[in-house]
Image (cartoon, rainbow, N blue to C red; front, side, top):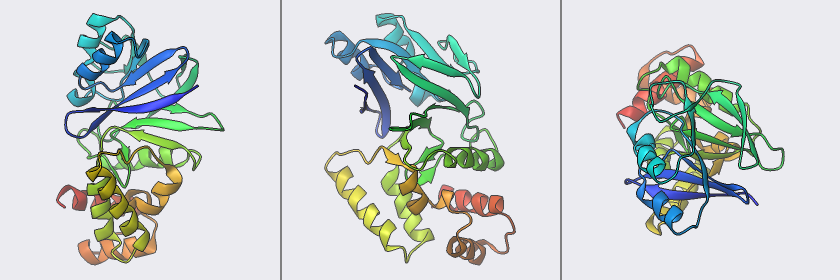
Length: 254
């Protein structure tokens, strides 16, 4: 039976723990301590590590975990020395009985990938810091065009696809979404629910694409009210990419 659970790291990171009766995968272990505790107590039988991109808060725990147990580390083609299974767009793999397809989604970083499980009954994506609930990642190494294209690739997945991203940013993202759509009562209600969840120590993730199409301004660049809001704030903008870029720059300084 498949289970996916969050392990908290740093102040707002999630290391995702994927388990079946064949073993476990940890995704983006920025810290090792909690993973090592689960291994030492025989709570998990670690079979692999998945890495979405090279940032330290997603990779810093790899070597310490490998000292405990040597497993394959699947990740992008970059300079992460611990990655021994380097993946590109369209690659397919089966780990602990789960089929994954690799999707390259640059923008946040140039090397960013996602692990996509396309099972028709329970699809999910491990998308690191590209798509968040209510938001998207900052553009650090790539371009706004790359990030916009990456979000559009994810958007083409089935609407019931569960989204497992790397950070608990939902409340701050939805605060921004409320500023973008101040009359949207649905977003306001979700924001209030997430704040309450955070106060009670409950993760707001995973989310799903169907929900994100309703609450995430970065997936709504064709929405006329959002376009009017952005044009009113930033001046005349002609393309969806320009709307997206203005949204992302607004969020960067929000």
